[in-house]
Length: 465
Ligand code: GAP
View 1 (cartoon, protein in one colour):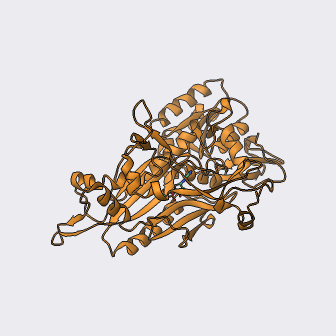
View 2: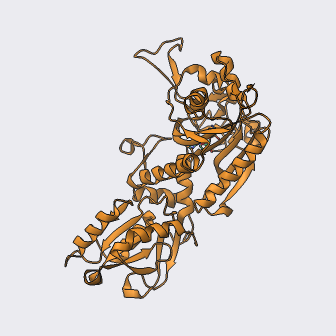
View 3: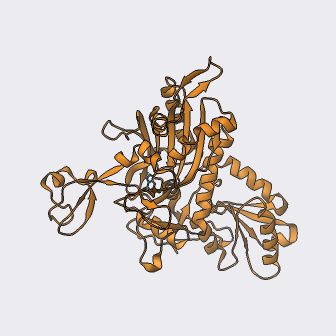
């Protein structure tokens, strides 16, 4: 039932993750029946549940748990001057080289230096072109006709952050926020990426979860360190394997044009250590530039401090939502040899492997699956009634097809943390089997106590494997 090859048994590879994601309806290639659209992906029934849960979890963390952070949902299309002010028109570029022979295209900073200096294609040995700058923003136009002078050109936003900066005064005025305070936003961003390999890791259309925290100049280093700590703790709370995370400080050659200091949280993906989230000290660059380009006064007036005026510094935490989804699938992925459980033959015996996604129950796409041992004798009806009740509080699944052991495996592969099995004893005394994904242990619980028991289990969940 899983595509575990014997060589790679027990190991997560991108191939296995991609195949499981497709097979179980997490992620599909965009426009697949037309041969696929590179750099774009579609999220299937389990994928969208997972993505929504990650987003909700982050949103809760940022807004509900922080009195000093409010939310925003700004438009993807913004005034084109925004991107001149932000520096993206001038600086948001990748260095690009092409092979004249095989036509392969590379990011100059991602091929060996010796290929670059000898202008030799790393794929076929053919001659490479000179390096040229390539702007990553997608350009389109407003109105029915594209004008030659670009006067109606607009860009699809390459980061959600700018929507926050241009609304910072609106939010102070409408919500009476006082510095220090933050604005959180989740939304799509678009980049014309040259290299779009590694599944959904780097795509042209993706989603970001960004929080911009406005602070008094001089307090920025302290807040930067605080946000670094908080973001690290966030992943710990999500149950991520902490030895698969590390910090990487940007060197002077890596710093973005706006950054005073920047650290990435990197995750050990199957293809190596890669950026997951950035924590940036953006100084007062963005607001100063917007003040300059818009002609508006974007100074903060500190009424509690003799009306002191200043342009705030900004500490940014910027995570990819779709990249976090990939990370969480990789992190949850496990293949396990299943020992003979013996108890009623409900789990496998002998040489059997299971593929299991050990998602934290707070983000698992399905929280609980209800399974009648048999379709007949009223067990299916009872199971459907139980599902109906659990639906009010949890995302549920129902499966009555095939042997119970196989049904558990299907739920393991989808990352469902709890299964409830209705059997003949259930009819006699109202108890059901509650089966735990990670340990495969089973306990009997009265059906009336299921909802509250699940709540306790979710709250107390600690990943052990
Ligand atoms: N506002 C700052 C900013 O956008 P970034 O380092 O360019 O900083 C932040 O991006 C995060 O967005 C990254 O850490 C990554 O998780 C995600 N991200 C960036 N480009 C992406 C892409 N092409 N595909 C998927 N996720 C991407």
